[in-house]
Image 1 (cartoon, rainbow, N blue to C red):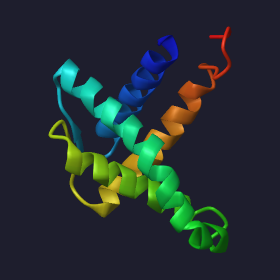
Image 2: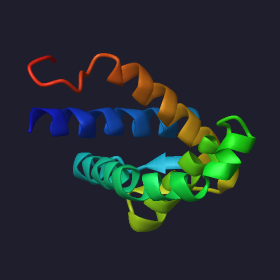
Image 3: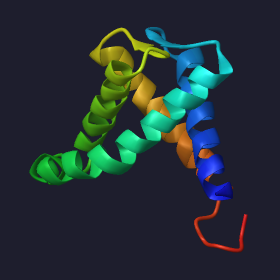
Image 4: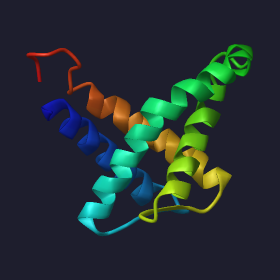
Length: 119
C-alpha cells in the first residue's frame, strides 16, 4: 500500500512539474483533483501504455526508441481526455509535458525502490 501511495505521489509531482514548466499544460489547483489525475495517469500508463507500446514496436525499433516519446505523449493526451483536472493545449504541449513527466518521474523513482523491504 505504501508503494502505491509513493507511485501516486511521484506521478502527482511529475504532473505538477510539467504544468509549471510547459505552456499549454494546466493542472487543477485542488489537491484531490491532482491526486485523481495522478491516479488515472498511473492506470493509463499501467494498462494502456504496454498495449500501445506493443503495437508500435516496429516504429520504436525503427526510430531506435525515440517513438516511445510519441507513445508517452499519447498517454498524456488520453489522461487529459479522461479527466477534468488536466488540460493539454495540443500535441506540442503534450510532447514537452510528457518529456518533463518522464524526466521527473525517472529522477524521483531513483529514490523509490520496487523491492519489498526497501524504501
